[in-house]
Image 1 (cartoon, rainbow, N blue to C red):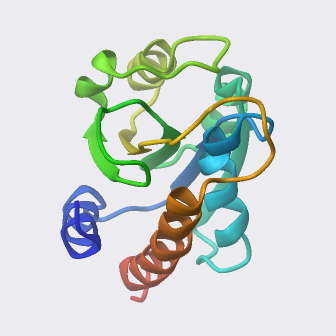
Image 2: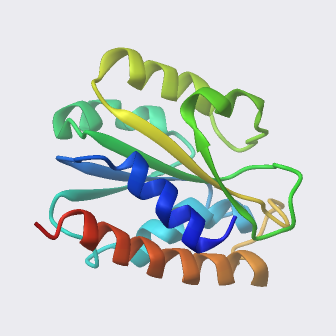
Amino acid sequence: MTYDKLENELLKFLNKPTKIVLLGVGSEFHSDDYFGLEICRRLRKKVPKKVTIIEAGVSPENFTGQLRKINPSHIIIFDAADMNLEPGSIKLINSSEIRGLSISTHHLPLNLFIDYLEKTMNTSIIFIGIQPRSIEYGESLSPEVKNTVLNLSKVLEKLLSKVFEN
């Protein structure tokens, strides 16, 4: 997916947001699975006040209380997922399509977490997945994923400012 296409799709998804949560999922000890956390860390202090960043790690279900308190109109979840693409490739996935993805380092399957949020909150959820090169033990991102993080964080910073400029 090109960054222009991603930006256009996210603009459609973020129709009249009141509050947005960026939720980073993954493990900082499993190479490219760190993607979700790294994207959130890069965006911290660079997004409008109506955007909350949560680094959920491997247990996003532990943040359901905080999410209910924030009561976001939109949640964007970032995580590594095996989508049979080239390493570093990103894909925007609607919540209803997440069941087929292989996401290996979580305590609770991500689709159950998303189902719970959709049933208990009035929020729209979308997932941005990245194809990892490796999720083996290690503390650094592969060059492909690192490059995607740099480019994606720039796109998101610009997009979120545009969404809340009025």
